[in-house]
Amino acid sequence: MIPSAFKHGYSGQCVPGSVGSWVNQRTFSVGIFQWIPKRGGKDLKKSAVKFRVIGDVQAKDDVLRYAEVLCYKMDEGWEPDTKTQRYVSLY
Image 1 (cartoon, rainbow, N blue to C red):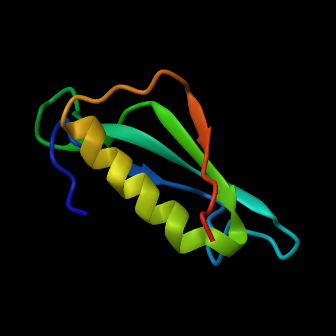
Image 2 (image 1 turned 90 degrees about the horizontal axis):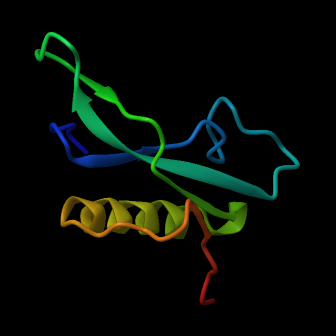
């Protein structure tokens, strides 16, 4: 995902397999933010988290795909009515 001004992105410090994760972890979350221009206008920075997706470690790939879909929806103008959402696997 290439950052672009006012587009949305996601990140998570405790995504399974990352440096911040731990062995007995059962859930993790990713925060969805907006890329905004820095004061000088040359570079971009992350906004505060606008929405958070929480999911089970076993569904890591599904949770990350869902977060990506939500980024696209937010780029198109969709605004969530809550601050967090739990991802529930359909499998």
